[in-house]
Image 1 (spheres, rainbow, N blue to C red):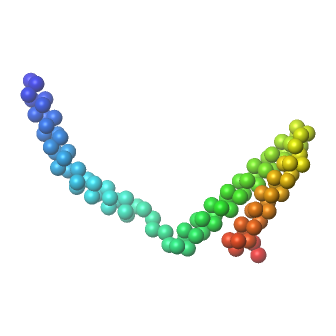
Image 2: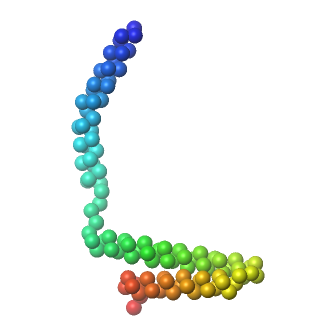
Image 3: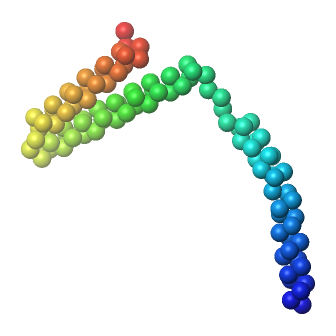
Length: 101
C-alpha cells in the first residue's frame, strides 16, 4: 500500500515538472495580452492627474483642518495658512499641466 502512494506522488510530480514550462509560457502570453501598453502622452497625463489629485487631497485635508480649528477654537490661523499654501500649490500644478487658462 505504501509503494502505491509513493508511485502516485512520483507520477504527479513528474507530470507537474513536464507541464510547468508550458503553463509558464501560456501565463506569460496572457499577461502580455492583458497588460495595456501606454503611449508616452498617456503616461504624462497619468502623472499630471496623480499630482493634481494629490494636491486636491491636500486642499481637502487643509479645509477639514480649518473647520476643526474653528469648531475647537484653537489653531485657526495656522490652519488657514495651511489651506492657503495647499490652494496655491494646487493652482500652480493646474497651471503647470495646462488645466487652467
